[in-house]
Image (tube, rainbow, N blue to C red; front, side, top):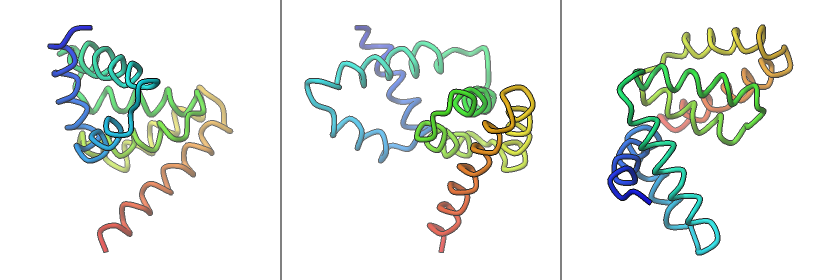
Length: 128
């Protein structure tokens, strides 16, 4: 494993998803799943998210589209929060999900809109 990529990935992961979430994930890791945490942090967040070719907001919008079509609700909700941290607006999320509905199928779009509404409601309630 590459410690420099891990450190870069850990920094980016915390900036996007929030340090509390990432620290909780790492603290919950055990001998079985810690290699997956390391792989994800190093390669996903360090090697790919750490590249300069796309802004973080664009990467977030791409993730939302792919996770919607792949039907990964847990990851979608987590990455929606990260997208908002990256400056993606609610209007932009709506446009991404409209695109998902056309190219990935109406059921994917409907599910993604439902999940997004849950996240928006949760975040609004947390502000109160």
